[in-house]
Length: 127
Image (cartoon, rainbow, N blue to C red; front, side, top):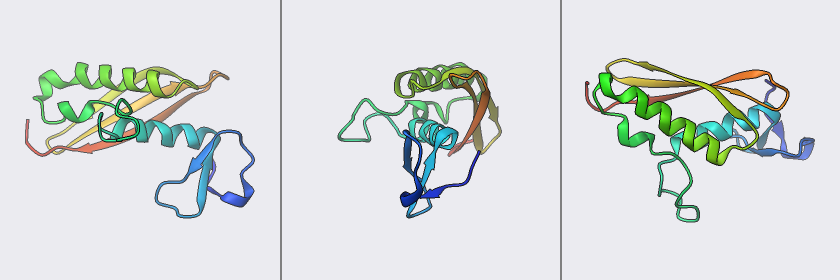
């Protein structure tokens, strides 16, 4: 994946401002990667202009480890399918320890190349 570009040098049809990098933009696969991160870290109902945008992953963050995995996978897949039509989800893997959950979303764009996006979450209670 490439590094962010300045707004004046955008060449792709799909782009967005780079998170954490004022004045820079992401394009292509980095745009999709960032879009997935935004979808999965935006709680449902938190965007007043799009109350259905995001995912309900935060609802399950502090669930017991032995019960949470299917819910995390389902929520991630449903949210990405709804909000990122440029890709198809191949697999969602979870890594859980006492204080963190990490989702690894493997996805495929139209050309068939599988990509992976990693989204970490902090847990507030030990499971």
